[in-house]
Amino acid sequence: MQGSEERAYYELSELKERAPKLFGIPTGTKLDEMFWKVEIEGDKPVKKPLGGIPHLSIINLTGVPDSGKSLLAEQFALYQANEGYKVLFITVESPANFLYTSLKAKSAYLGMDFDRISKNIVVIDASENPELREDPRAFMDTMAYAIREKKTTNVIIDSITGLYEHKEMMARQIVRQFFNFLKKWKQTALFVSQKRSAQGAETAEAAGGLAVAHIVDGSIVMDKKLIETRWDITTFKLPLGSVLRTIRIDGCRLTGHDTRTWVFEITEGGTINIISPLEEFIKRKEVM
View 1 (cartoon, rainbow, N blue to C red):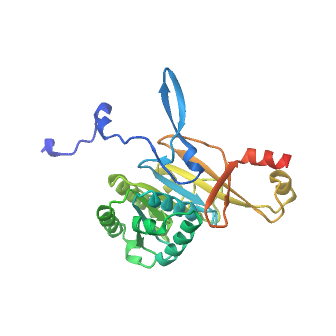
View 2 (cartoon, rainbow, N blue to C red; view 1 turned 135 degrees about the vertical axis):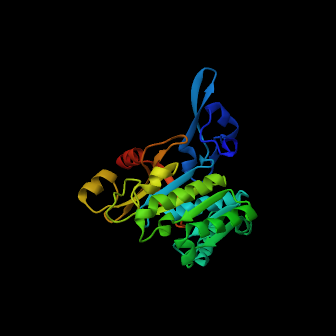
View 3 (cartoon, helix red, strand yellow; view 1 turned 120 degrees about the vertical axis):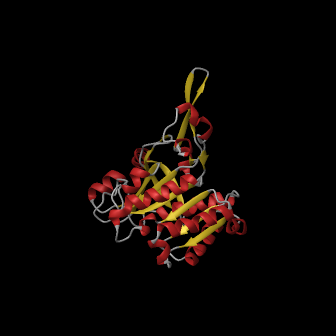
């Protein structure tokens, strides 16, 4: 009986063959240079860009409304699909036909092959299916079928918050189930998280508290600031009424990363363009 039970402990050396390789899954943005790994060359450690978010990581994208979370998730999906990798895109907030329109327009703006992309993105529409949203087990069965049949390697859930609306006390339990499920199926994933109005814009906290941030492998915080005071104008060198958008890797347990706050813009095509660290952005504005 004891021999048939699953082991609860391992010597560290026994995990060598099961350990995932550390490399980046590109997002098509400057984030690909903001995660890194350290390699030993000769006898010196050398920091090298990872080339994307860590392979098999589950990253939390959080921010206030209209901060660019969904745009970044969509850009990641487009880039991966255009490169020939399969993406499972789970839309919880907006019906899938609107996702189609958004992805088609962005692919044209980025000069990508939408015919190729449309064959490599698999969509589960949970926005109008309360059974999926309310029953994590049924939801994961549907995801497992899609992952297995379509051989996806990347998953986006936009948003994970929509799976525990009106029951935020269960957020940790629900997020943990999806985290473990995606680890089992060896998927690299983005969870989009919605903030409540009382939560600090600069933190990784979202609906359900820090449930997502504590469980996932890393968090990316996106924010926007309205320039509305004389102090804002003086500090950021931007006109009254304009918007300053920022992005920051709040943490990642799998690899090194840039901890600075970066400025980004949303292009006219609805894509993310990360410009520079905030302090450099302000200095450049001062000399203009």
